[in-house]
Image (cartoon, rainbow, N blue to C red; front, top):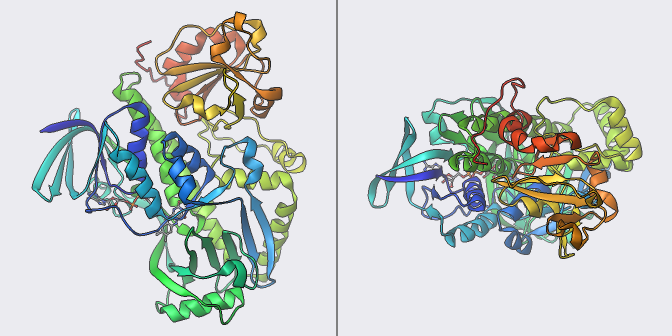
Length: 553
Ligand SMILES: Cc1cc2nc3c(=O)[nH]c(=O)nc-3n(C[C@H](O)[C@H](O)[C@H](O)COP(=O)(O)OP(=O)(O)OC[C@H]3O[C@@H](n4cnc5c(N)ncnc54)[C@H](O)[C@@H]3O)c2cc1C
């Protein structure tokens, strides 16, 4: 029987994203998809800044930027008063990310770009016509049984990634429940050819949420068409195309607007997450682990982060650099994020859009109007919404009211702490070429020494799987012999942004999250901290237990 390190079940966007993550670390993998081709359903259409960063690390960003539609302003509109209540701006994220914008692209186009990269791979494979029938775990392996065009096929894998979607066969076989809510209301998603740029009663951005107690609408501009999302009340009939077209004409206040329907579908609305994300050697990712209403455009974006979080950990375990305990942090870190995205982001969005009480609506409108004007609040909202603010705090602490007030009033950005994603600040590489910090942990950890190069910092010995770089405001002179390891930080901007203490070392994981911040006096302990304390700092909820990593240092 063929034996492989990793089997990925499901060739949807998250299975493909997981494959591309394994490419980053050179770990062989195989993807098994039941259908004969990729899905042609457009489904997800909105890719958030954090996902764009991950797609860059996965080597597919060029195609995504080429095919997609960029924009940096989301509108929240009150249909009753016909006012834009709040504009959420992404461009203030320019110091944080190379992609301070949202990008609209049909999911089917994204999948095609990802799959093209995988078909060129020397270590990965995308196999169509492979329907998983069963998976069993015995000892140090999993046995997967597939029904294929050529009959039954069995494969052994060390680890299995269940990326088989909302109806996951693997999740059912493992008896894992989904907890949460399915709403009685359903959503109609319709794609149209229509000229809303010039013929709507008001100009729309490429993502506009129109609030209304009875009939809210979301407008999403795609590269070749417009998409509308509207609710269908529990006892209402499924609308026919002409009814939907009338609704759209009413919302945009143009009764004779020419509209051509391309596609229409009705979806149940859930916010549910799996009660367990790991069972032995099997992991749930994407919709197999969480079902998030499309209102916030978060399902696919959350799934892309799942792959980004899990795969480096599997790579470290498979290379013998970490013990299997590291893998437990996947569920510990990702499940709370999925619950937050499903409930506090996507579902709250839906509640805010359809508020019925006039008093609540007035308060909502005042709060959003205030957020629209307060630069700091705008920034905070965009930081969370873009998923750039995703954090895996070891002990989640609420930001103090004082800090929130300072951020809102004075536009003070919160310091970067353990668990946070490190901003992708601009630096100059040793050749003087403009680069971004995230370029320096493509296939490993980054130990970032925030030290003045004139003090000749000692970067210590090489550690397997860790790249060491200096972040310095004074460029490294050639006689320091540190030039090849120094990143020039113009005006110390990046060091200031992360609020680094001089001399400190930031240990950054391959998924961009800070694993440890080490004071200058403890610099020599870096290898030990990497080996022994990494798991605690990386988000293990039992702060006293140490999970030794078996790194070959
Ligand atoms: C209308 C709509 C709009 C949306 N808009 C957004 C958005 O703007 N932004 C966003 O982030 N998310 C959005 N989403 C959610 C997003 O589409 C999903 O989160 C995403 O498709 C999840 O990807 P996945 O790979 O986990 O699952 P899927 O896309 O469901 O892929 C699972 C794959 O597994 C395969 N499979 C299943 N069973 C087996 C088996 N037994 N053997 C082998 N293969 C199998 C399936 O054929 C499929 O190809 C939207 C969803 C809908 C419905």
